[in-house]
Length: 442
Image 1 (cartoon, one colour):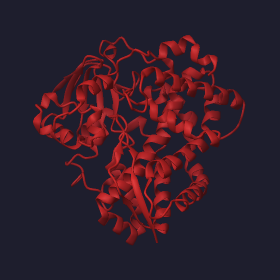
Image 2 (cartoon, one colour):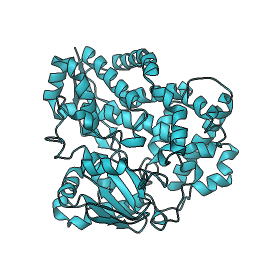
Image 3 (cartoon, helix red, strand yellow):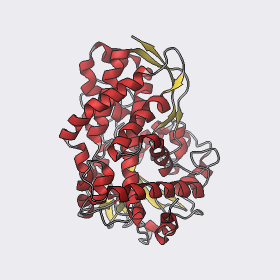
């Protein structure tokens, strides 16, 4: 650990005694009733138990029908609204002047509702900014997803994917999440950062703890443990930063260390951008890689269709991203009093755009809970967001998923889920922590 961890910036960034909304919901949430047993006002879609137990579907279905702009209030978070219909989510995401990102992107604290909260520098990635600062910092790293770069990296992705798939044991149970999804996404992320390959699983660990809810037996057990490990991330990247200053490499660290709008930022100030790129490049793709295997097991006819006609890949990729929706929501903060569907949203109210609900809106997607790789409008899914914050790495994610399944189709007759999946305890990351499978080769 370097002295970076002991700066005033670091002390201001993290409070080991903080009680987060997720902690409050965790304390209250054991044994959350089924949606039909709750009054509509008592439904809280941000409760992480709904996702770890895979019981979110009916809660959102009721909200879409009965209360699509839904109000909750917690002691820790203050006032927040859940937006659950497709058109409303797009409307909020497309109006950055009314619904700002500048006070954070996940459910925050009650100081926000009083207008008394500003993100500390180290928690201000460009996704949590509005124009023009957002635009300036985003352009620093957007070259990584340029079509020319995707063409350059596809052979490497294919080679690594083939090597991982060739190493899988046949007829033995193994964890797809760790062996395939994490390995492939971490290899990719290490390449994008030009990060030491021998330490690449550190990226996975830092990604896991960003939105982890401290609890006994959890990803992290205490807030202090979370702080200590994130400060390790700061210290590690501070050294890479110094090494890359003045360099001309085409990796994300070099881009940030030398970009006109980012090169003067301290390591703590850069933490937000680093964590954004780590989570964006790791959690989302890996959870779609895992969720796709689970989905094709739940809907085996779709696997048979894909095997029979690999040309359906162009529909499979956006459909499975819709079906999984690896990041269930993003948050905005109202910049003024406004109205949506007759509900009075106050200035500083938090507004959660539930992409997971929008992607399962019956008014847009027929039979939305089914995986249908021939779905005509799958490309309308909102998993990558909408408007100025549309995911910069979307094309990289789609490329990784396409290559994975092109290589799978060449090698495997089936990938069978042989036990209950274990899911991430979070409402912000919709993912799998374990997925036991066995493969049969062609």
